[in-house]
Image 1 (cartoon, rainbow, N blue to C red):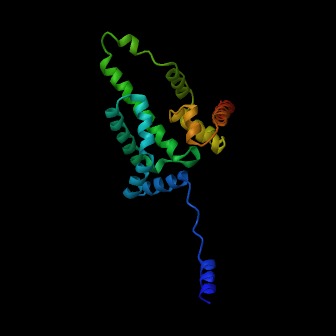
Image 2 (image 1 turned 90 degrees about the vertical axis):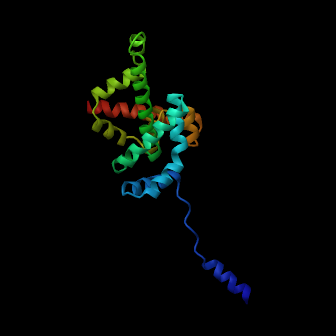
Image 3 (image 1 turned 180 degrees about the vertical axis):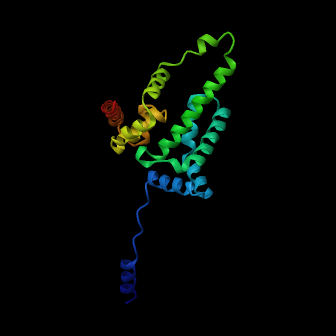
Length: 203
């Protein structure tokens, strides 16, 4: 009798919802952050700070400066949290883009301060990738880029954001997205082709 009753109770016990994926949880946390919930921002920081710090350290090569710039990136993320748009990429890619930009700005600032004398001419030469991006930035306004990014598939946007705005290598993108390296490269390549075609159509 007791055994039957226990079985009925077991059958009636609600099955808990499956855990949310990390990208979904980060979207929720950033949304709460935008509404001023500091606890949500702290959790967001705990879940992402290792990867954000890693991106900054790879650019700066100085643990002390990397820690400082990573904190600046999170301060910017807190202030700009209401401006995040999920259709342009994941929360993680958005954070990594902020962090990478901050790190590059720090490098340029330090270079400017220390290279005004004998190294001025040599160190003021921008890298080829910077020249390309600066040219694109001058020719393509932000809204066009946003529209072009929206034309890509979600998987293409995420891979492209991590590789070109987050500063990750193809191999690191593959590992972060749990994909074979060839698949990650294909998504990045297809995303670049789609972005180029979308911008070309709007030219």
